[in-house]
Picture 1 (cartoon, rainbow, N blue to C red):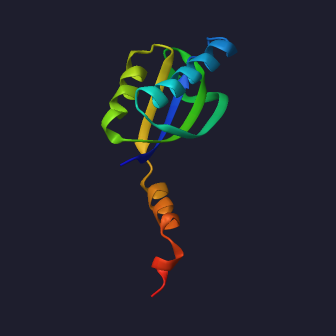
Picture 2 (picture 1 turned 135 degrees about the vertical axis):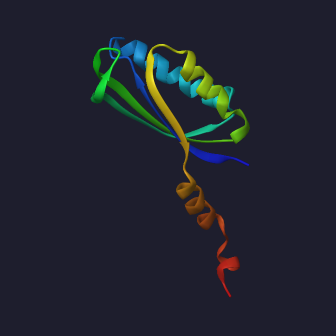
Amino acid sequence: MERIYESMFIIDPRLNDEERETLVERIKEIISERVKGTIQTVNRWGLRKLAYPISHLTEGDYTVLLFKAPPTDLNKLEEFFRVTPQILRWQTFRREDLEKKSKKEEIPAEENKE
């Protein structure tokens, strides 16, 4: 069973634009190939001020991904984030609200009738 996840990560702003885009593409590949997920949306926020300094940096390049994936292989994405020094912070969480919404939309109209 696939679940819906949202992953937000902050990339080191000292990388040039091309390197940051390449890293985002690499993460999308990992979700598709290793995690066996399907990406629904990619939201690039760009450079934003950090809430607090991280490694003496005051801004970072933010990206938010929304994707469907089986929960069994999600740790492969987390492992990639952990070993990639260009990613300053990340957080991935399950979007149960979107799962419930999509389940309601999948129910055929005939089953809704009483």
